[in-house]
Image (tube, rainbow, N blue to C red; front, side, top):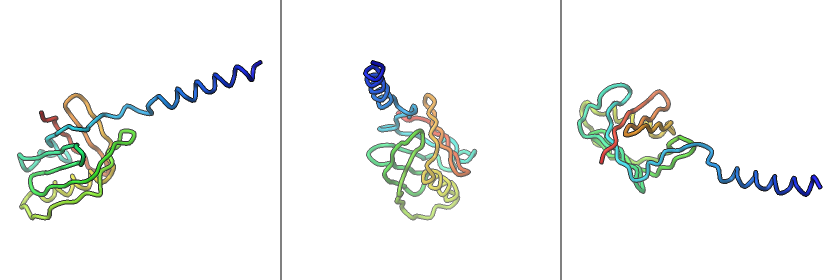
Length: 130
């Protein structure tokens, strides 16, 4: 009798485990952002963006970066990223930091209209755009 009752209970628990998400992962699909801080400093260009559409698109005021992206347990996976290769005086250091950050599977923290990405010694804060 105990065996007959244990099987339905085990099946119910297994199905419930499959239906329960492992973590709360923020939905970034279709959102646009503006960098407000890169490694603790204000962006050197007033024109910055990070967009999550079919592809991830980023710009820190000079070169555009683009590539596939996905979310996995609170981490952003982006890349491989392709980029234009213009030289822009005074903007290359932040651009390299953002490229390294996006390529390093950053932790994503979404709080209201503020998005924070952190990984491998780099961080960025962004503000949601309409």
